[in-house]
Amino acid sequence: ARAGLDPQTQRAAWRRLDEIPFDAQHRFMATLHDDPGGGRRIFVKGAPERLLAMCADQAAGAAVQPLDPGYWQARIDACARNGERVLGFATRAAAPGDARLDFAMVESGLTFLGLAGLMDPPRDEAVAAVAECRSAGIAIKMITGDHKGTAAAIARQLAIADDPQVLEGAALDGMPDDTLRREVERVSVFARATPEHKLRIVDALQANGHIVAMTGDGVNDAPAVKQADVGVAMGRKGTEAAKEAAQMVLLDDNFASIVAAVHEGRTVYDNIRKVIGWTLPSNGGEVLCVILAIVLGLTLPMTPVQILWINMILTVTLGLVLAFEPPEPDVMNRPPRPRDAPILSRFLVWRIGFVSVLFMLGVFGIFAYAQHRGYGIDGARTMVVNTLVVMEIFYLFNVRYLHRTSFSLVGAMGTPAVLAAVAVVVAAQMLFTYAPFMHGLFDSAPLAFADGLVIVLVGVATMTILEIEKILTRRLAL
Image 1 (cartoon, rainbow, N blue to C red):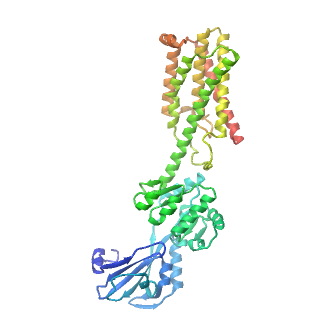
Image 2 (cartoon, rainbow, N blue to C red):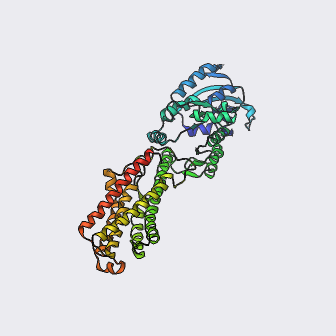
C-alpha cells in the first residue's frame, strides 16, 4: 500500500498456484504465481542467511549482477543491531508448464531481491514484567528463530539479563548434554532455534533442577511446551496443538499475565501458610491446656462448651479473613521456594509449637490471676476465654506478615475484612461476658473494667513476644 499498489489487485494479477509453507527446518516460504507479463514466477521469503545460500545473483534494477554476500550480511547485522526482525526476498522464473512447487525448484539459482526489517519494540508492560520476574528470582530465557543480532538487541531492550549471552541453534546440534546443561545456565538467548533445540533446552534446565515454564504458540512449540513443568500457550495466536500441549492458556497473549499469575500464586501460597500458622497454634493451645489440667489433676480452665464457643466464634471470623489477605509488599522480591519445600516449613513447625505453649502459659497464668483477684470458678473461666480470644486476635495481626514486622501503621490498621472480623469477635465477647442469657448458656460471669485492661495487656505482650521471636527466627534462618 505504501508503494502505491493495491494488495487485492496485485493478488488477483499474480494468481497463486502453489506454495511451500514456512517451516522452522528450512526457514523459508515459497510460492508459485502466474506472471501477468507471461509465464510463471517463484517468490521466496524467509531467513536472509538461508536465502543468500540459495541465490546465484542479485537484482540491480531490471538487470542482475553477481551476488555480494558480504554487503548483505553487513546490512542484516545492522538491522539486527537495531532490534529489527529481518526477512529476505528472492525470486526466479518458472517454466510455463510448472503447476506444482517442490524444494528442488528453489534450492538454488534464485535472484536475491532485498531485505525488509520489521520493528516490534517491547511494550512497557513487558519490560516491567521482566524486571519483576528478575526481582522474584525467575530467570528469563529467550528461545527464538530470529537472527542472533535481533535476539540480542531485543534481550537488551527487555533487560532479561545484565549482559545477555547469545548462542545460535547450530551450536547446539553437536553439543553433548553435559555441556548443554552448563551452557543453559550461562546463556540467556538462543537464536535460530529449531523445535528440537527448544526441547533440549527445556530438558537441560530440568536436569539442572529448575522448574521450567515454556511459552509457545505454534505446532513446532508443542513438544517443548508439553515437556515443561508449566506449559503456556497463546490463546489468540496459538494453534490448537500448542493449546492441547499446555497446562495454561493466556487469553490475552501477554507475558505480563504470566507474571501476574506468579504474583497471585505466591499470595495464595502465603495465605494458606498464614491460615495454617494461625489455626493450628490456636487449637494447639487449647489442647495443651486440657491435657495439662487432666495430667496434673488441675481444674479445667475452660469447659467443653466454652472451648466450642471459642472455636465457633473465631473460625467463622478470624479464621476466614486470612484467606483473603492482600499480598505482602515483598512477595515478588523473594527467590522461588525449592521444589521439595514442604508447606509446613521449619519456621511454621516451630511457630505452631511455640505459640501453642505461649497460649497455654497465658491461659493458666490468667486463670491463677483471676482466682487471686477473688473471682469464682465461673469468673476465672470467663477471664480465660476472653484472654484466649484476645491473644488470638493479636496473634492474627502478627501472622498477617510472615516475612516482615507487623509493628507498622499498615500492619496495625489491617484490612477492612480483618477489622470487621475483629469487631464481630469483640461484640460477641461482650455478649459472652455481660449478657445474662449467655451466663446461663456458657457459665460465664461479668468482669471488672480493670481486668479487661489486663486481658488487653496480655494480648499486647503476646504480640511483642512473637515479633521478637519473628526477628530471631529470621536471623537464624529457620
